[in-house]
Image (cartoon, rainbow, N blue to C red; front, side):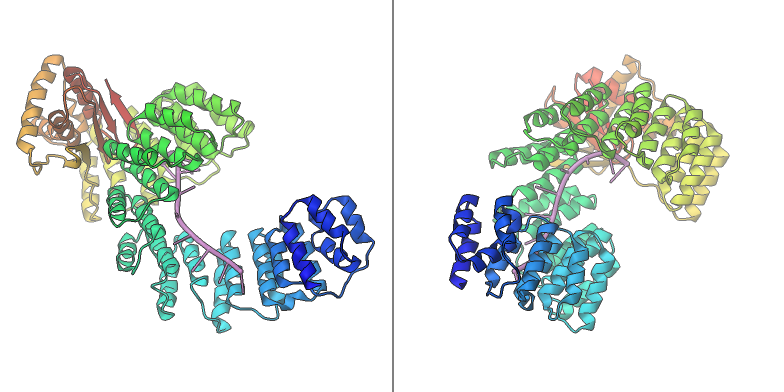
Length: 624
DNA sequence: TTAGGGTTAG
């Protein structure tokens, strides 16, 4: 009998025709048992065969056969059928079968069924506990994961290298480093710190919780680093805003002979996008194509994003056109790219193409689209999409959508409408929203409203120096120096420091970073000489410096000097020296580019016949 | 009989 059943389990892999043949040629009891167990795989005429028999049958079933059935279980209903069959045959006494059933329920995210069965299990081993914790982790029920973990401890079950990574990932997903450290202690207590799964999970957890130093320390101490550990460390740096270190690590990884796969390439491409470094992006691009990584949806989308964020919107579009499969993320990335490059119409065209292709937009698609409208001054279109998103696509506007709308109305000077919109909002307001309103007030010199927005902003983030600076700038623009002084005083008393502005540029195979008034660069002398030259030519071309952007309440002459050495100017001057004539100059600034540097760049581009591409914290500025 | 790292906005 056992032999025969083994034969059947083999045939389940085979075609239906073979299966029918097999069923027709065996004894009735065996046939019926097999038919019961695999009923959902059969068509109705075979089910009839099953109904002609009377369960239960007292024959021996091979656990391996049941497990192979469970492995093929298509859905929760199928699993329940198999569950009732194996119960009839008393097979749940077999721990392997029981665990596999538990696992199958968890795989189908049927945690209710899994947990009920878990409660009935007479015997449980560490696999059962791990499967249960992993199942709840999979559906994001972290409270249950920790509840079960407490039981593990209470029952005296030893947590192992399967249990602990699940819990560490829970801490990562909750961004809860305190819990993470508790689990880390458990890891040390059980001597599991050198297990590669446990260790990679810990590195990932610390990095995603932005405790990057601890992540790096663990990573450096790992006895052997595999590809996954390298990938989480590379991604961790990018996540923490140090994408430069990500790329350094990628080079070290290859030097150690670890060969990247597609997932690690996605991480590296995405880090390169965050860094926005054109030359690095080219190397990564060549690596991806040189090593024949196929462009699936995720890698392709990451590549679009990288090219766009490194200032090459055309090559981003090339990649986009080359991709065979596109999903809502790929379309949204392309729309967003057109948006921050200021190509509003192209963003709208892409959106139409997306709809024609049958892809439905999501909340992020609309954030990208509204952002594009706002930055291209497409007011009416923006208002239309804001209505359309809910009416046609059932996408509820979130605070980001409202922020885009406030920005859009604010830029157009329709502050009253913006305020009405903010007052009508039912979703919670965040600092981005108040920031957009404050920015609009700055453009239009609307002091009363600015004070209101700034107060809300400072209530949300009392320790963010940027907000104080913005309000102080608005007072300064209006010549209200007493209020400026008041804010400066407040900042000094609260020991708040302004985030220093810096600009960097890639040249001579390296990164060159400048801060305002910087004289530390080895070529500083040549850079200032170049600036002096430029300024003379600019004056002749009709450039008049607008010192209202230097908001310190000091003498005009001092203000001129401060404008003169803004970090973006130093980077552009260096770019003119360090790159061949006619080559485009790409610079990146950590904060927003000031209005006068914007004018300066426009004039320099005209005089030197260079394309200048400035990426700031908000968008790209192209000067040709 | 149980495991890992990846894409769009901000």
